[in-house]
Image 1 (cartoon, rainbow, N blue to C red):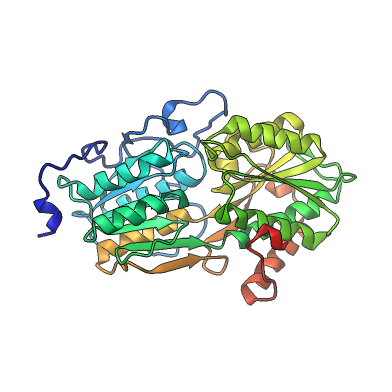
Image 2: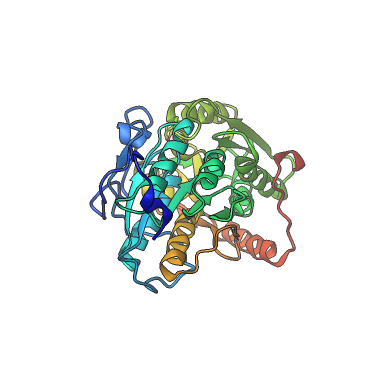
Length: 394
């Protein structure tokens, strides 16, 4: 019997009864940046029931259905952007829902509203006896500090974390080569800003040859997105200007108003295309692109699908397979081969990151542009192109 069965007088605040798969945000979830519900803002700081999202972007690295997880319980702690972001958290939820469908696991989800709440939710799942959670999934690098402490307090509890490395024997770490995928959308943006191009509700001004990047919180992780994007742009023409802005603040990944202001500044200064790596803050980038008649690039999921109202300005998305990391970690628990202390990196070669062209206007992108992007992808995999991870090195 797990030692957690003997814990006495331990509260499980914030952990609701087992949810199963009973509704929630789906692929059509759209947030306008100014009028969102508390759940979409992640503002309740409480658990929510699970969604039932069937679409999974890209190629799966697992076959699925390889084990019986009917007696496995998973606790999910999302990033502060909350569900309904059409991006990072929703991609994680896709992997969770697929594990429930394929493997039969049960799960509960929590949506912290701020970084200070991560430890409480992590510990609530670890302390719980009814149900007893076999795995606690922690989404986002901002959870690393809290998880370092929590993992040490509960050495018999298995955890996984996305986008960070926690040095503990009971934590599986999943990382991504975001810079590689960002290089490809940067190259696409560089090629398009140097030519006259119109599609959907947007068009370029080839005389400006300027693009932009909007990040959430400044740091090494989001810096990889910026570094790769800038390197891809500069590979086309070193004279192309790349504008960059990090929104920061108390909710860097859940502030569409700030995202819109940052993007508007870039469009007003000649940017044809703006790429964001800012979670739900990116909704504001899309809103700005529509108002300005320019283009944007999504992140984490195919945002031309998850943000359909902006599909006429989203050229492509740099998809990051957070769902694969979540699914694989759960499958490992089901199959009894979970590896705490292991680091797994998913890049272009593993299809952990990839470019997905926009559902509505991606077909209008010239084939010669797509061919050059495809060729660069293979060169990165073969080692012919080394993509920087630090913006200061571009």
